[in-house]
Each structure stands twice: as C-alpha cells, then as structure tokens.
Amino acid sequence: MTTANDSRPVGPGPSVEMTLSAERVRVDTVRTAVEVVTVARRIVTETVQLPVQIRREEIVVTRSPAANQTDGLTPRSGTERVGSLIPELVHDLVITLRHEVPVVSLDVAATERVTVHVDTVTEETNVITEVRREHAEVTTTGDLPGRRTSTDPV
Image 1: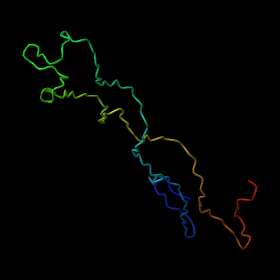
Image 2: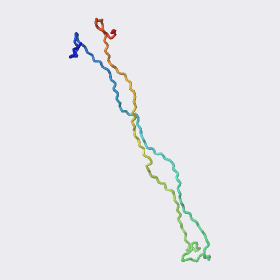
Image 3: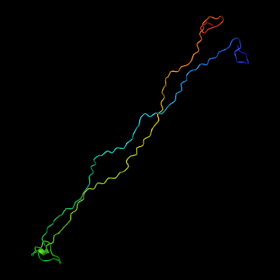
Image 4: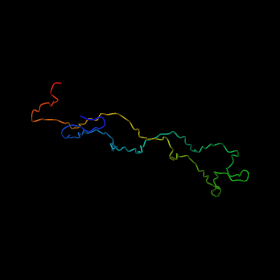
C-alpha cells in the first residue's frame, strides 16, 4: 500500500528492489579498404603507312644537228663548243641531280582526357545479432496463505 503523497511502500515488512538489464543493439559503420585500383598509362605501338609524293630529277639528253656542220672546231659567239676534239678545248659538263627522300618526325598531341572519380553507392542491409536480457523469476519454497503466484487463476 502507498499513500497519495508518498511513493514508498507502506505496510508490514521490508521491500527489496532488483534492477533488470538488457543488452541494446547499436549499429555503426567503419570504412575499410576493399580494393586498390591503379589507372596506368600504357604505350601501344602500331605501324602507320602514309602515302608521300617524292620527286627526283632525271637527265634528259636531246640531240640535234649542229648549225655549222664543218669540222666542229669553229667557235660560235666567242665560246668553244663542247665536244671539241682538241684536248685543250674539252670541258666536262657536270650536272648534280637531286631527289627527295621522306623525312619522318613525330610530335606528341593530346588526344583524350580521362577522368576517374569515385562514386559512393548506398545500400541497406540487415544486421542480425543476438541480445540478452534479464528476467526476474520468483520461486517459493513453501505455501503461504494469502499469497498469489503468477500461475494462480484470478
């Protein structure tokens, strides 16, 4: 029995209290390394074939009869003719011929920009664990008159 102003038990005998406890589940997250990803550049070599126009000089000899068909020793316009039979008058004609050769040069140009970013994906999962709790159990050794147990009918 208790009074209206007092929450302490009133009546015969001392009272005994017991505090019961139960485990609570608290779930948190921890970031751990799962995988290491490396983005590396590799050089791939390929053969490229490009058409290139090259030019070369060729000698073209055109022969025609001489204007003065005498002995070939008569100078024209104050010069000696090439092909003269007199050794002092012989001059070699030297012509340098040229040709083009392909020259290959390489330069580096940016062709692509690669961007790598990390996305965080959120998903929900269920955590299953066992928790323990205390339960008060009352046992008696004798049968006392006027006392009720939880198994008695009301």
